[in-house]
Length: 263
Ligand code: ADP
Image (cartoon, rainbow, N blue to C red):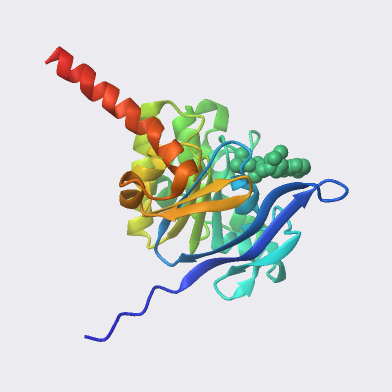
């Protein structure tokens, strides 16, 4: 049988760097090379300050690289019109990130509106249904929703332009564990159903292991491990990665031991 072609890259970081400070003395991202295949669900994991958000923000041009380039399909993102790029790349912001003075419907429609397109009421209802919210919520204000409902609206907004790529920056960080788990599973299901390519930033290794196909570990602006969840659980990826895997593993072991004692 002939070998099957590998999936094409939707996103490619080519020696991407971001430095801050008058002399560029703070290296937020230092020379990242990485290709993200179409259809993959990638988690970008690392301690606070390791450069995860900066790397993600360079994809939709919220941050400009100091060196190298970010390719979206086969174009340098800095050459694409921002409104057009942001329609093709859905972004779920850290925390909640809805505009407080806009209704749910206006929040969802903002990306297409900036690109000169009006979303129909039917499309908004369809997007709300996709994230398991009642279409009647379209006219509510963000402060009339729970944190979980707001972040569902954030996901609906990111999906409004039928994106090829979905970027999520700590999307569930502000949520309670049960809501967080439910929304994580929902996003994974939507990823499959809509044929998305997804990159999710998280500091939570358990979330990364449970949701992603591939885990990139960042440390001090560099990718220090690039493994499948199974390979990380088998002990691969080096010290930083294993340090992060140890946390949920030890918690699971302690819980299992407690269950054993209680049985
Ligand atoms: P993470 O998302 O992993 O928490 P960030 O990408 O936010 O990390 O930050 C990486 C590094 O870059 C940190 O040391 C941070 O202080 C620095 N940094 C990020 N944004 C700026 C900025 N606008 N000005 C100066 N330093 C920044």
